[in-house]
Image (cartoon, rainbow, N blue to C red; front, side, top):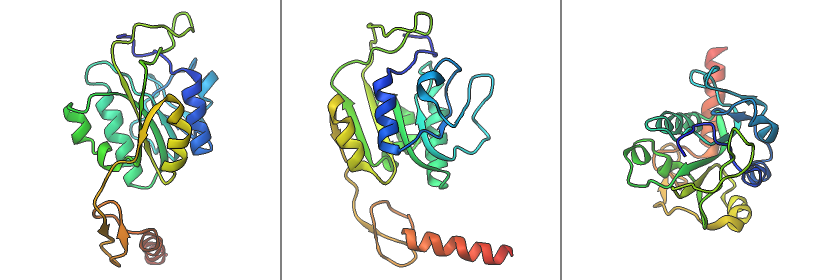
Length: 200
C-alpha cells in the first residue's frame, strides 16, 4: 500500500473524536479525508503543517512512504512537549525497532497505546472504499491526560496498555511526576504567570 493518500476507516476517527472531545488539527490530510475527519484546521501536501502551531486536539495519520512519517512524529512530540497540542491520537505502522520510534521520543511521551488485533483496511483514495491487502500491522498511540478513556474506547479494536515509566519528581517542587524532567501542572501555571508579569 504505497499510496500516501490512503484514508483511515471512519470508526477509528470517531473513536479519536470521542476520546479527545474534538479534532482541532489534522496535520497530514487532504480535502477528501475531511468529509470524515472534519478538523477545525487541516493541512495538505500543498499547504504544509510544518512551521505552524498544532493547537488543541490532534488527529495524525502520517504518510507511510519511506522517510515521510518521521518528520510528522517528531513534530507532534515537539508540539505536545511545548504545550500546543493538548491531546493527540496518532496512527502508525508497528515498527518499534525503527530509529525514528526512539529518536522521536513518542514512546517516552505517549500515555497509552492500542495494538489492533487485525490489519487495518485503509480507504482507497480512488474508490472511496476500504481495501484489504495491508501488509503491515499498526499501533495507535495516545498523548494526553485521558489514557483511561482512550483504553476504554479503543479496547474494542485490540489490546490497550499504559506504558510503564518510573516515578520521578518535578524539578521545581519535587512533587511526583510520571515523566522525567517535567514540571507539575502547578509549577507550569506559575511559570507562565511569572513570564506574563515579566513581559508586561
